[in-house]
Image 1 (cartoon, one colour):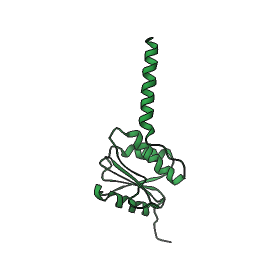
Image 2: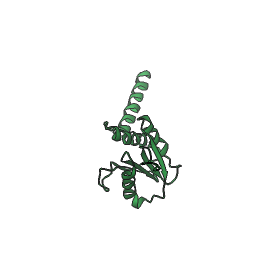
Image 3: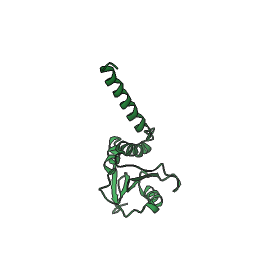
Image 4: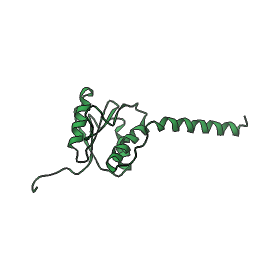
Length: 142
């Protein structure tokens, strides 16, 4: 294929704007797993996101695409049906750990590794707070 430029294998990450608050964490999660990504700006509408991100996953040489619009995150894989993405969630701007895990999971999908559980975040925080309170109460001898 002389003269044809092929994109290198990467996870496609589609955003309306690079200012998406969770984008940095999603990208960090992908980087942690050592997988390349390609940020693509597009005029995504929430009503068509499933279709658009599924189509993007079919264009990605890795078969994986992520879309981020207004804190809604979709992770899609080209072998899945359009209406059944791996992740379709709206996060709060402070859900940075979940966003990072979504990025990790996108990379782990390609590496065929077990996913990180998105629900662990809340439980881990509860356990840390509980343990800290117990430690402080013991120090105060209550």
